[in-house]
Length: 426
Image 1 (cartoon, rainbow, N blue to C red):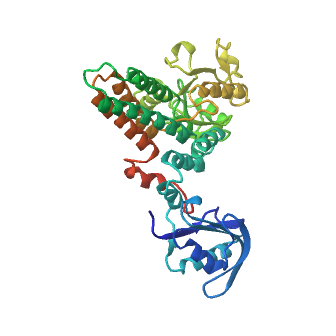
Image 2 (cartoon, helix red, strand yellow):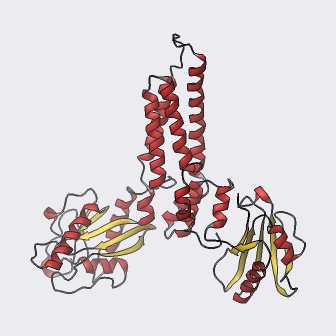
Image 3 (cartoon, one colour):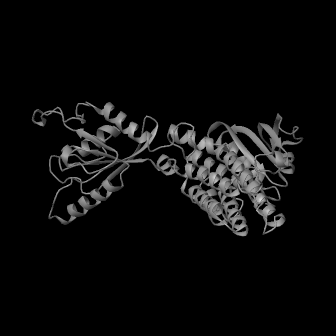
């Protein structure tokens, strides 16, 4: 439990119409009274004059008080909703800094206290961090569901079932005679059923493509129009375009959003044999990127396209007279005229939809998936166990995996990194 009282600006940087300054900790109410006089009843807003410890009037602000476990941090908390000018905010923060027992909060410290005081669990904290960093609509929806506790509720349901299974295993150990056939015949079956449920969650699309963007790689031979296509899709001159083969020597990444889907669009060097050392390196990197691409946009001949699960065949520069007929299942595009770009974008979004969680579906990040994998593996061991003592131990390990998932155990090493992602007043 934290013993110091912290304060920080919790809204955007001034100037703004309103700025919110939060104070949380054992002497938060005392600090609130030092600036605002009598505080309003808990969870009720009241207008107060804010004054410095020396008596100078700082601002007229809306003041809210929250008590102990009922606050967002699980501690006594006061919020000052003051005018958002730089001078006002600076004056209020300076006044708070001169009150004994108060210090400026570290990045993410308000949220960390909420976690440490049981107001949120680790999955909700991770969702909140992702929500702050969300840049697309799909990222926002997924992060909001996680921050609001959708995964936490599911985990609590699994934990309740695990506890019931553990109780049955312990009862069988304690009360059933070794020579008796009257054991819990359904225990192994029920362990296996829960293991399969966890495995079904693990088979769903993960959070990383949603967070980092679907990697869409544009590939093909030199002078196929790859860089021109990247510039056209992004609406900016991000890649150098010339008629000289081999102009693109290294890949170029552009983060963008297509239809609310986060995309990491990559232009690559033209694929060909070359004796030039720098170009050889670029070609080798291009081949590696083709191998790891989530979606491949291929601008070469259809029969030369790499074997890829999600390939979009593009007939680029379709406006040129020497380009010939559009091959079957290819999208005709012209970066110069804008032809086919909407159709290409729609094809990319369609392929991406199968790689991202469906609407309303929760997506596990790598840490969460590892914890759930451990719990599922332990449950499978329990479902195959012939010795009740071993079954009980496997169930204990499964519970430990879910405890790590929610942050109740074994996560001390990652807390600093997680809460360091938050801004100062969060």
